[in-house]
Amino acid sequence: MRPAPRLVWILAGWLVWAIPASLWPSWAAPWAAGGITLLLFVLLDAWRAWRHPPPRVARRIAHSLPVGVWREVLLEIDNSLPQKSVVRVFDHYPTACDMEGLAFTFALAPQSRAHASYRLRFTARGEHVFKGVETLADSPFGLLRRRAFIDLPCRVRVYPNFAAVAKYALLATDNRLSQMGVRQRRRRGEGLSFHQLREYREGDTPRQIDWKATSRVNKLVSREYQDERDQQIMFLLDCGNRMRAKEDGALSHFDEALNALLLLAHVALRQGDAVGCMSFGHDTRHIPAQKGRAALNHLMERLFDLEPGSNSPDYRSAATHIAQTVHKRSLVLILTNLRGEDDEGLREAIKVLRRRHLVLLASLRETAVQRLVSEPRASFETALNAAAALQYIGIRSAMIERLKRNGAHVLDVTPAALPVALVNRYLDFKRSGAL
Image: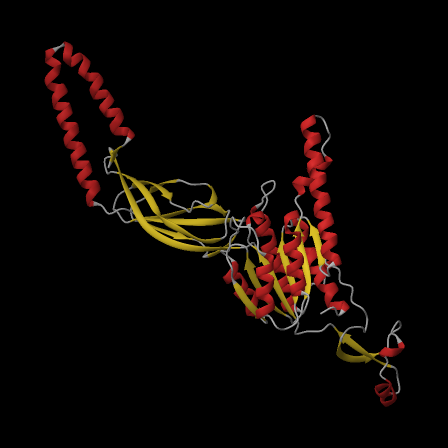
């Protein structure tokens, strides 16, 4: 229980009344009687408030949410009392989110129900817990407010924002992949695996013509091929300290890499390939390659709460583990953020992987470094920053060239450009028969 503003004002008036009561003895008795009457009313009001149960509150929220997207939380409150009730409500939401629109004040009619909603945007993936709802209800006389904590535990899972995956699925259905930058360079009739026979079309090469079928139907018939299916992609996802970088309020490098991983996994699964993943550098999780619709959901369930740590990545150890456990030739895709000190370890890792697999190294480029180079040299400090940034870029570029000479394919892109760049490179590998 706590005093309501009404009681505070009444007590203030009673204390002001104490001034003339102290000056004129005839006012003392009425002043004391007023105090006793007020105390009795407060005790009666407190007793009536304790007799009444707190209002019933329910919370409605989806149990699976995307990170970084605003979602509504609905609160419903029931007044089971035969009288009007004024209730203030505050929901104890998880700390790893932004909030808008809380708290609420409900003026509830007798035996009525009301509802209101507020918005949350989770800033971290993983499992988060709502603890309960706190209510502050006015007593029947309005002199007191009764605080109650209603235990409403609720667990929600916050996944990577799969909007890019949904967007790809929609564009793929409508044959509009070019709108997101994915190049569809389908080569008429050419490929690696026989698909079907069809009528000859202008532009078909002579080697596509099936002469046996042509002789049977008395017109030119061409063979049409499609890209190989039943191939395999293994992601090596860096969970080291560099992937915690975040620029200009955007997602962290790790979250950008995870979104790109899910997008490419979706594309590869639609192509009939199997997809697996291994995280390294902090939390090691090995997900064997799988095919089919359930494989993407399995990836999300295993990776949704994965976070980068404070360790440096050990590329050699991760490559050795993949070489020992993945025996089928695969496209091994390393998602990381390169540094100059990685040169020797990465070259050793790529040497181990290239004995059996095709290796693609996707490195996230920091836009903040590029901004330092492009800033005007207005002072000695900015000139020093620009010189350091140029040196860093030079060392990184030289290392990338050495990795390419060692047989690795390398993508060096900004985090925002990574998803589409990965899809395009994967489709290039498929159509070239590199796997």
